[in-house]
Amino acid sequence: MKIAMVSEHASPLAVLGGVDAGGQNVHVAELAAALARRGHDITVYTRRDDPALAPRIPLCPGVTVEHLDAGPARPLGKDELLPLVPTMAAELARRMAADPPALVHAHFWMSGLAALDAAGDMPVVQTFHALGTVKRRWQGSADTSPPERIPLECRLACSADRLTASCTDELQELVRMGAGRSKIDIVPSGVDRTLFCPDGPAAPRGSRARLLVIGRLVPRKGVDDALRALPDVPNAELVVAGGPAAGELDGDREVRRLRALAEQLGVADRFELRGRVPHEQLPALIRSADVVVCLPWYEPFGIVPLEAMACGVPVLGSAVGGLLDTVVDGETGVLLPDREPATVSAALRQLLADGGARERLGAAGARRAVRYGWTRIAAATERVYLRAVVGRDLESADGSVAEARKESVG
Image (cartoon, rainbow, N blue to C red):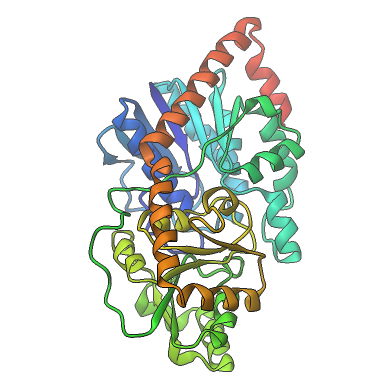
């Protein structure tokens, strides 16, 4: 099957760790590669953010990345991209007309808007990766999303042929937004189990217990809460991987804020910001940890807990979003109420005092991670594609699908 993927701000070629480069980039790259291994022909369309980028770049056998010219060829925050969607849609329609795919799979809401506008009679599968309603609920006035996001997402949820939700929590949110339950499939993100596995080298470490946080340096990831728990976890260090490159840390405002907080808490000597760590180096860093700490305020899915489980390291996480599906409390890790540092410190002390419990949790996590291998995730996605194609063939009998869709999304 020939498949067009649209990922307007999250290129599978991007360097991970920046404010707008994270789990979605990994998801799109890994899913495209896994589908190609199953015999599909994948083209990923993303916005050009560098004038030096070639129009077409092979990612791996069966997967090509194509760059859409929309707006200035430089990095832009994803919250700046909505005015560029019509241009992206027109360029996407032109590209797909030359070699039509069987369907379009859009990643993120603005990709979905462009895909619906460009697809015509082709079926569209939508994966949101994050929802504006959830972001607004948790961030309030700090939410920088365009004000049109929530109503446009609601229309998109009703107009796409099929939706994939990354977890149970997201499925329920989509239904509250008006999407029909019968057209939603839960398809989680996956983990590369050839890279993230218990066997392999571990990064060097000292004598202190190691607590590890991996993720972008944005407030909702909960680095503050891990840091505030540290004073009550003696003889433990907190290592944070993510954010700018190591040589650029001093100029980052969030880095300066976290360092100041560590000084205020009296734990600066036990707090280390590593900066951006290459993806291929993460398994060794994870294996060096006693516990991987994931304390987001909200999390649409969360790949890091999966990567930790696949490496056989227990997870201490917030009981929110996708973590409620991936981490089994008391079996593969520990789930706690979000934003309660005192509860976090108590749980960490208990985990660090019981090496046998950590070993059991880690082993169970590695077994559970098998179900999240990319081969399985690609097979589940393929089933969604087939439902979308069959459904569109039935709906197209009256010849009014494209017009009805256009009216629905405005």
